Length: 278
Image 1 (cartoon, rainbow, N blue to C red):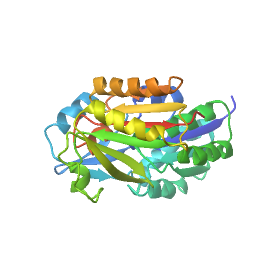
Image 2 (image 1 turned 135 degrees about the vertical axis):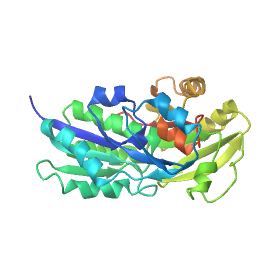
Image 3 (image 1 turned 90 degrees about the horizontal axis):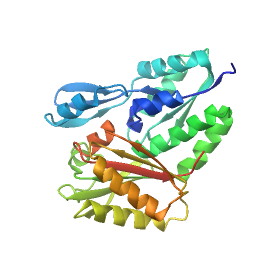
Image 4 (image 1 turned 90 degrees about the vertical axis):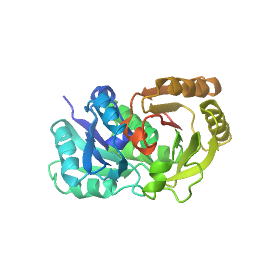
């Protein structure tokens, strides 16, 4: 059997175990700090137990994937891979990208290329899934990286959150507008979280966001990823809104995304991305 390009990412992509297994994606775990405990967000974690713990502890922020965990992800792929492409969350948000680069030199038997996604959550998932599809079709690492670099500029990532308190607390946003809002609207711009409005209801938040994105001629509306933290009914409302505007859009829904919930300061956030197909 011909060896194909292996795809690795970190768990800020919020990929479910079923998606990772379907596409053979290896994941390296982001850690979160709950009070004085550090918890690794692995794709095979017990998500009910995680959300139960999340509801009773104070979120204190996140910690980057360390090089050893990246090396383990690379090693899981290397026996069946000619090369590996690792796609990480934005280095403006974490040192995870630098850790992935450090781990490159620890696997001399298989070349590793590390790509900055410029985003996180649903946007990262959209890019990772596209890269994995190209790998399964037999595309080279050059073709995959070229697509990623182009698709990165055509992908928009947003978050509708019931709170920006955690982001404000750990210094990820510079303003406190929206900290106590019913719903805060956040985009990932230039690799960073950028608050850009509030809404009094979830339907209003969806309307504001999608209307804004509909005016952006730089976006490719071929694929969407919706990622929620224990609020499937809100995710369905958002998917309905996306498909009402772009009926041909291919939508992937990720249930119980732990990192989306972390940034939303608990269950209730819905992250989403629009971008191109592979």
